[in-house]
Image (cartoon, rainbow, N blue to C red; front, side):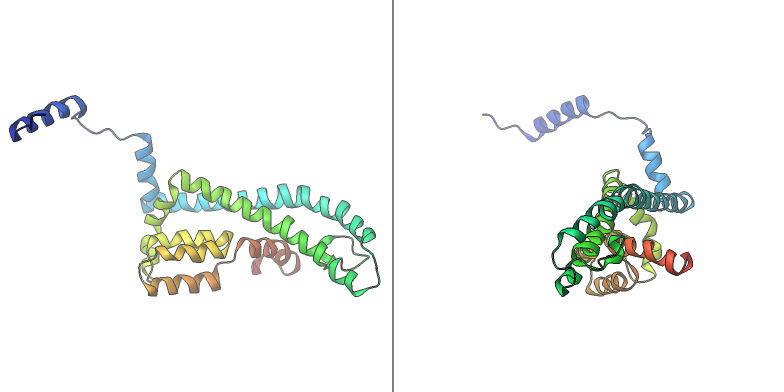
Length: 226
């Protein structure tokens, strides 16, 4: 095979470029326009508030109203609890109070047993909350909104020594602190990781805590303390 000279290679490059490259004015697409709107503070901040509000409403409606209140509470309180209160042997024994709890309780949340309150909180409160959270978070990542949110919030987080992409472990920790802590590895310095871990440990509740807080605090204390 003959080796091409430098001039021949450049001629070949020009021919390929002429067939494959189009020159002209760039016309922004709808996707480009939406991307620009999401990173400009004037439009991006209201949009971010709207997205996070929609995030919270979906979280409450999907996890709380649809699954927990609409299906799982009835399943546990009207079917599972009466069955296990009758089926578990030894109503007067300490094992009964540990595993089943109060034999006259009319709901799993107040029974305070490992097989009643324990399963109810894990399956009816925590699981729907985590599923709903990661469902909507995965959607935001797939449509490319998370990097734009990081760009938008970068200036704010710089004031406390972090970068914009610290929003990723923050949002992950709203579902579960473990992946949130793991995600702090993307931060550049040990100082930034320490700041982020401190914020996650003190100020960012996980999905399980949010589920319990939203169920108990408004009822017992009031929305203002939530």
